[in-house]
Length: 195
Image (cartoon, rainbow, N blue to C red):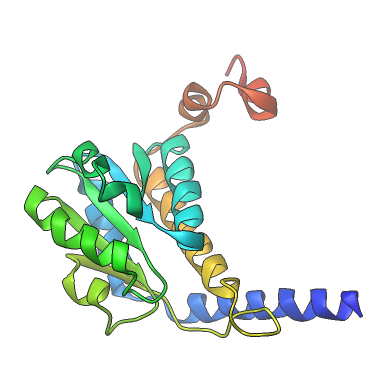
């Protein structure tokens, strides 16, 4: 019983990634270009499961040569917007694109004057319509048996974010020695020691 469910879930998430791959377009290229050209930091923002993905992506971007950090969407509305400067780019993650905290943050980010990237599955959402740039990924069924828990959607966000981090790293000619500078600890740090 469990093995069947495990396999069904993995297949659903694999299908979501394949759908993403088949639907990548020029919008993704433009976002990569703008992130590469940015003179500030890349700030990731989200709440709930999207917030967890945003936090992981901020860490991946930072360790691969793109200075970045994470702000929780709720904390942003209680003073953390002060961490953001006009020169920064803010990537706001929301599967629906209408998460109230993200909508409120986007409205206030306009006052700061920074550029924004809406990262969502909903092209008709507030986030997609009001961000400077868009990362619209395909809507796919969630992988859990109820079709409700963020599973395939968060996997899609994570894979797309990782892909962009890798593209930026390559564009910046980020080397192994650079990676070691930001990641001196653990097994990877030891592996790269002395390079």
